[in-house]
Amino acid sequence: AILRLFAQAREAAGAGTANFSGSTVDEVIKAAISQYGETFEAVVNMSKVWVNGEEVPRSHAVTDKDEVAVLPPLLLYTSDAADDSLRV
Image 1 (cartoon, rainbow, N blue to C red):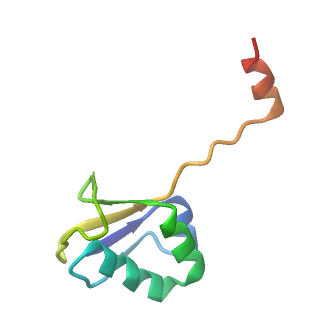
Image 2: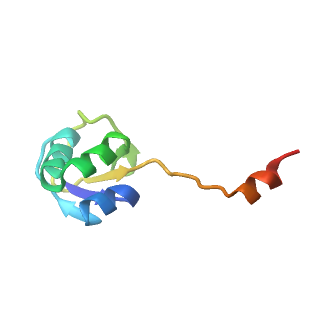
């Protein structure tokens, strides 16, 4: 499958796209963890995984043509000034 990595997942892997063999999402993810290591594994464990634009369980079947996307949660940063402007 084609693995697409975003945000922290891309940083941990050092790549945005790669190809991995596997018949399920879990097999593809495990192959990527084997290549990219523990930091990548930590990011994947807190991420959503989508196949072809839809969120799926890790048991979902994939082929070599499927696109598996790892989407880490978004972190929102605010400054004290921004917080003050929200107070009523």
